[in-house]
Amino acid sequence: MTNSAWHQHWYPVAYLRDLDRTRPTAFTLLEEDLVLWWDGPGQLWRAFADVCPHRLVPLSQGRLNGSGELECPYHGWTFAGDGHCTAIPQAEAGSTPSALRSSCRAYATAEGQGLLFVFAGEAAAAAAVPLPLVPVLEESGWFVQDTFRDLPMDALTLLENVLDVSHVPFTHHRTVGKRENAAPVKASITSAGPQGFTALWQEGPRKGTLGSQSTTFAAPGLMWHELTAPGFARILTVVYATPIRRGECRLFARFPFQFESRLPPLLLGLRPLWLQHIANHTVLEDDQVFLHWQERVLEQRGRSGGAERAFFLATGADVYVKALHDWVNHHDGDPFPGQPLPPRLEQAALMDRWASHGAHCAACSGALRGLRRWRPLLQAIPWLALLAVAWWQTPQVLVVALLLTGAALLLAQRFNRWERLLLAGDGAPPRNRPD
Image (cartoon, rainbow, N blue to C red; front, side, top):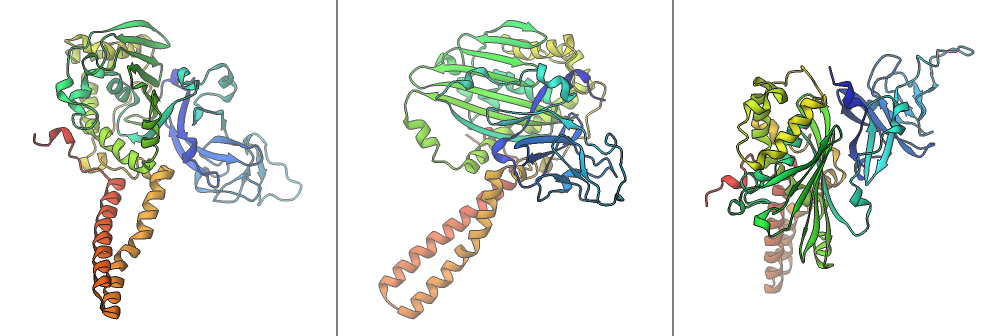
């Protein structure tokens, strides 16, 4: 059973760029199966309960018909954007099926800052609840790098991890951190209440070289760090933790920059999004395995209610973790009270990238199709080069043939590596490589 308080909020469910307007998409939010689809006549994204009122099959397995309405795959019942049934092919002429019983439950949806949000509670209550947006991103001049991934951990476990600034030099050594940058963290909570908390780390990361860092936790599922590195950029780290079910959440990670120079965004913009996502996976997998294990140990020791006894919060660096669990304990903040975690996954499942990201990502799925489409041509180049040498039998053709063959073999090797990295991680975090 889920905590009803968590239903009175908006949650991001997808980046708009990853949604396909030609077909329905399945998503699970707080254990409720949803179908997301583009309502052509209404010109907006819709979210329904993913169950046909006729025979209870998932509408996400259906299609959008020629009228732009959602059609059930089982018997062709069709639904308009407000949820009411517009066609029952099996109905006899003159019959009047119940409008109430033939309708789908429609959830409120909204777009904001490139994300599609769904309100988890009753649609009528949604208008009174503001979208969980990051206010400063409404300003102009931001260069934003985004990624997402379905993670095998609770939303609260993810939030505990990303709020904790002190783990970065060690967990993410050789990816986005360095062990030699570790130092005491003298942070303080500057406000706290039902809506979350704020914190300030006056010195800031990398021993003060990046300036002070402020942190905001906007309950229940959004947090961001903000700092301004003198002479370089204003930098944010934004994380949404959207609860799917007990032991699983969808991470939306955003890395906005306001650079003082025009050169960094130009250079960063040259890298394809799917290559950026491969790099993001490596960082996420730095701590994915041990967080999946850690939350099971905490569950045995009382979850958030027993966190202060279970953890040894020995330094000022732990102020963020304590503040999060204080919020959970004082404001009914557990999304799945009393529910046990599912069995622990093996490492191969934890390293899966395709089901947890690539299959839902327009950039990564497109890259995989492209790699597989061009690989036969690369494989053919050495044979074509050999035929050219045999036909013309000149030194110039031989040199060109050797160069093309070498390039094709190197690129084919790179294609194979990219495909592997799009599908799965290797489970070997860079921090553990020999010095």
